[in-house]
Image (cartoon, rainbow, N blue to C red; front, side, top):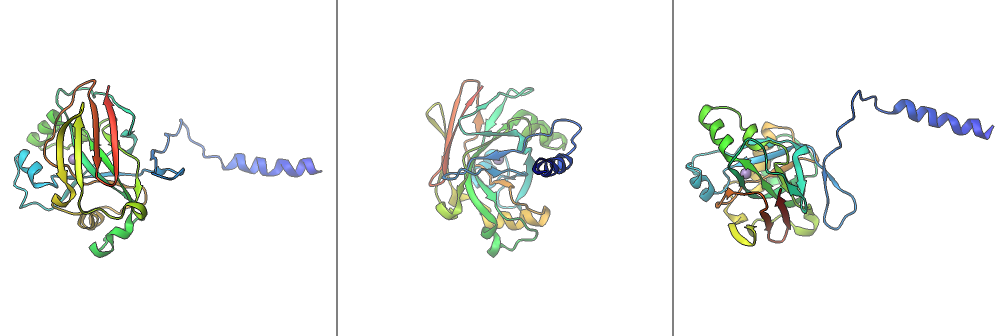
Length: 245
Ligand code: MN
């Protein structure tokens, strides 16, 4: 009798198993500093031209623009310590080192003064870019995906909870290639700060827990090549080290 009782719940459990017709993709996630539990990643939003010097180096006038956004595929995440495989169809792959904000609580039309309540923590990321394909897309008025949303295009460190780091408004953002400094900026130079970004972005898209926001890169972007070691950080938040394979 005891045996029969045991069998029943096992059967019920089997019926509940999700009936996928092909293997379901693994849910992307990132480690969290000081925690065993990981941060599940949903969408990846990126801010374009958020530092005046970088905007100028790309041939734009930084004073006239509202923030604009593009996305990357969360399945293209590469964690620190990993390898960034040099992508296909490009001879000009660039590094863009950026502060990343990790959304812990979703919302739409989030007012600026409440925006930071929606941020779980921060990381440092590299918005890898096939600059030649992006340039072609800009010229022809086509979407940016080929330049920005290719496989392995989103490199990201561990996430540091804001309960530990606070919400940074200044601090060095830097990138070295093979030990040589290539990008150096400060969070205080961002044209749109994190609360402003969250306000604008949440008007366009309902934000959800698990979303990442790459907040834009300081000047000094440039090409990488196979074998390079990319090492970057945001002061007080995290560092990231990835090899180009
Ligand atoms: Mn970027």
